[in-house]
Length: 427
Ligand SMILES: [Zn+2]
Image 1 (tube, rainbow, N blue to C red):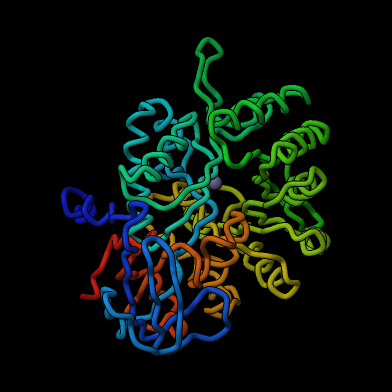
Image 2 (image 1 turned 90 degrees about the horizontal axis):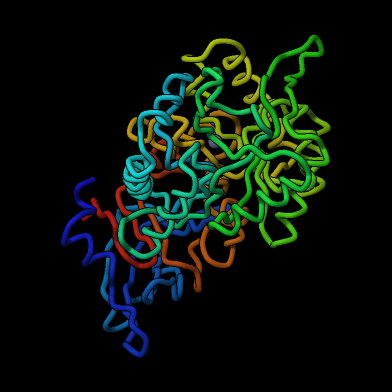
């Protein structure tokens, strides 16, 4: 990680983009280009970059005079990856003890320092954009991390953030401590229709790009074989959250694991379903009909299951079956990992691509979930997610062929964000 810091890093991060100057032009010769939307790769592509954007993509051709030439002919170039479910302020919470310790023993400034480190890890793994889905008790520190990255103070992906997330009082940790103690909470407690609208306005005021709420908890299988759950908000409260969020032009992500929680979130009108283990045929059909995204977060499910008692293993098996069904039905699936639910330093987020292929996607379909579909979910289809003229020059490269071996995506050798090179091990 050290290579991103210090003098060399700042020189790379701040190319001369000043108005009026001749644009900085770079021509990348890619042995193979997977552009993020086509069903087949292009061999021998020439990608011309001007300042922070892609100016043109051609098959072969020669680089224009004066352009800096970058030879990636032995590599496969792809769009920068997008993870739409992360927690940069969390360092893994397989057990409740791990979670509580972070909220009780780590200050928010300390957690923000770790978050900056995590953002740097994500970028080095090829993730050039992320939607960070709540700070787990670190208040609005995600807004600061996002700002520091955007200002070029620290390296990291482009971020959309959800700030604090919401549940009704008493339905999210820290719980179980003496009533004499005023404990911190992992979310903002929100009650009643008026409380819901006020909380949305407050989070938006402090910088939330998305509103996230916890639709359910206490996941359990019943005799019908369906994964059920306890729904947190009343329908009136959940609808107020969604209505107020949409009214001010933002979108809502709902944590929803059991079928009851997913159904309640769909009734409320959310835009994305997070986790979604307990999806049923009827719920999937409704998501297809309404174009609602599913963010499966398989990496976290498979990571925490062995360390947790109860249903987690069975839930992971159910999600595997549901993934196959959702794929057949055409549910929009966007890649999300829940990084932070597992330790950023131990698991590469790009593992999620591998699970999608294991669960039935073709490698190209899996790549699209973490590129063009992710961009679509973020409302950034015109900016990123594909390698095309006019979009940000957010690119990664691997030395092998990910269409033959999807785990190549866990070995990213080259990372460019906005035309600046953050990593190049292909030299
Ligand atoms: Zn999460």
